[in-house]
Every structure is written in structure tokens, then in C-alpha cells.
Image 1 (spheres, one colour):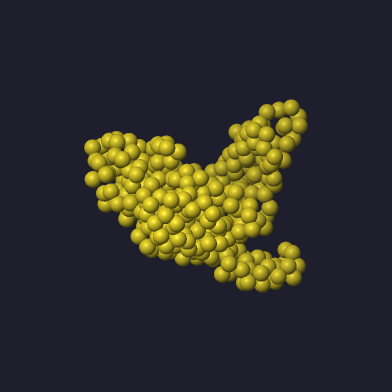
Image 2 (image 1 turned 90 degrees about the vertical axis):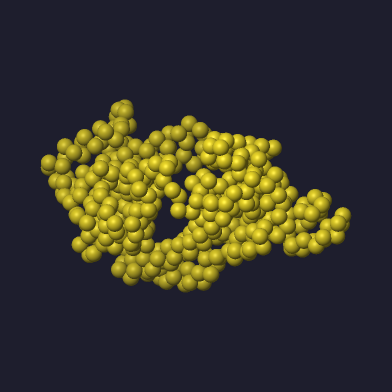
Length: 400
């Protein structure tokens, strides 16, 4: 398994200046390579990052001698990023995409700056990381995954520096939130007011972090528009705006990560809807849809379930979870989005919309748990139009 972790750095002023120099060197190399790529392509040559890297290394003895003060992997990684950008561009052109995305020059005052380093030159020990030509830099937390470091990238977001590490972890590594129960199931109905309604009766309120900070965002954006672009006060206000956006993202991620980790740890089978979030984001509720981060929640639930040994059952897109009575199975076809409560005409049961949907999703997960009891099965299984993510140890029956 290859897992990733982003760790916040805690550099001093000297270290922060060195990191900014590395980011500037990566940006300069990328722009230099892009200009040279265009020239080579116009001359009928076939450019690639290795040819450009050889030219940059040759110029390090003359006009680009200042690049020798920076780790060699910084410029190397920037040219590899350029090569990947062109590969993605040509792939999109071949597929006939309406937005092929030709690579652009990187700006100095972009909100995100960064550079890559060779994993062989990187060392992580406790709450420290060692960079070539810089030394040890403190971090806010330790690396959670034991294994071989494959790649590392340093980025600056909202004035803070982070290192993103990819680690190759053995399959025997014990996931901290591994599910210890057998046969327990839950239905999870996702929404905008309540982020998740569980069939157990629990309700997790949506953080609505963007809505909460909307007035402050508007005020800071107005302040930024009054500043002279490129001036010191403009840079300060832009940094303030970046920190506010970072806080909004962190609040949202904290809720989704805690919720998904709790679900895969407590329940063996989890029933959820296969939501078409992209289509939902084209409606008048687009801002609330993006603010709830439903796609991120489903993605986290899928990969954490595989690590925890749980099974996620995705209901079909046209599965009437809200309209179906979980007691007798009668479908109320006339249910509208504004109706939060309804009464079944067949059995007379009064339903709360989201709670009823979660009960039906739980029943769906229980109905398909037999598929997860095949010894040694893993991966994805399609059963009656329902996508199953299965990971089961040899000889263990989950339906017990």
C-alpha cells in the first residue's frame, strides 16, 4: 500500500528563507524549461525533461551558478513536473477535451508555491525532517506510517510550510482505526443540514464552514480590492485572506476525517448512497453542496474501509431510500424535496425523511453482507447494481 501524509513544518526565519529560495528556484526552472520547450518544439525537435535538465546542469557552471546553492533535486523535480504537465495536455487533446489545459508560466505571487525533493535525500526522525544543504527542520507531528519514503514535496499554503510524504506501507501494518466488530451494519444518509444521519439515530451536523465565514470573507476581499496590487499592504491582506481560506478547509476536513474514521471503526458494513455530486453542484444549492464536501467524505470512507477491514455498500443511483417505507417497503412516489416528514399509506408509519433513508440503507447493507463473507475476497464486487468494496481475511465469516 502507498499512503500519504501532509505534515506542517515549524521552520525558523533562516530555514523559511531557504525554503522560499527553493520554491523560487523551482518556479524559475519550470518557466525556463517551458520557454525552452516551446523553442525546441517550434524548431521541429522532440523535447523532454531530460534534455532540458542537461542544459540546465550545463549552465550551472556559468550564468546559473546560483542554482548550485539549492539541492539538485529541486530543479530536476520542476522539469519533471513540466513533462507531466505536457503529458496530461496531450492526453486531454487526444481525448477531445474542451479544456486541454496548455501549461502556463508560474507566477511569483501565486497562492501556492512548492518544490519536490528526492526521497533518498530526505530523512524523517520523530518531529524533525532533514533537508540537504539545510539540515533539520522541526515538524508539528511525526510520520504516522512506517515504511519506505517514495516521494516528498514541500508546499507553502497561507504562509505555512508543509511536507507531503508518500510512504510504501506493508499490508501487515495495523490500521489504528481497524474495525473489531463482526456483522454490525449501519446506514448513512448524507445531506446539507445534517452532514450524516445514521440508522442508529445519531445526527452529525454539517460544519457549514464556508457559510459561517462568508461575511468575513467578503470583508477581507473588499479590503484586498482597495489595496494597490503588489504593494506591501496588498501582500499582507492577501496573506490574511489565505489564512481564512485555510481555516475553512481545515474545519471541513476535521469533521469529515473524524466522521469517516469513526464509521469504519465502529461498523463492519456501511450503506451509503451513490450520489451524483457533480450534477448536484449545478443546481441552486451548489455552494452548500461544495461546502458539505460530500465527494471527499465518500472518497475517505472508501479507502478507510479497505484499511479497516469494513465493507462499504454503495446503493444504486436510483435507489429510492427516502421514498421507501422501511417497515413495509411501500414507495411514496409523490415525495418532494420540501417534505421532511411523511406517513405511509399502507401501514400508517410516520417517517422522518433522513432517518427513513438511513434505515433503508442499513437494510441494503445487511442484505448484501453475504457477499463479503466469501473467504479471501477483496476489491470491488457488483451485485444487483450495487457496488461492494470488500476486504475479508481468509476463513472469517462476517455474517456471524
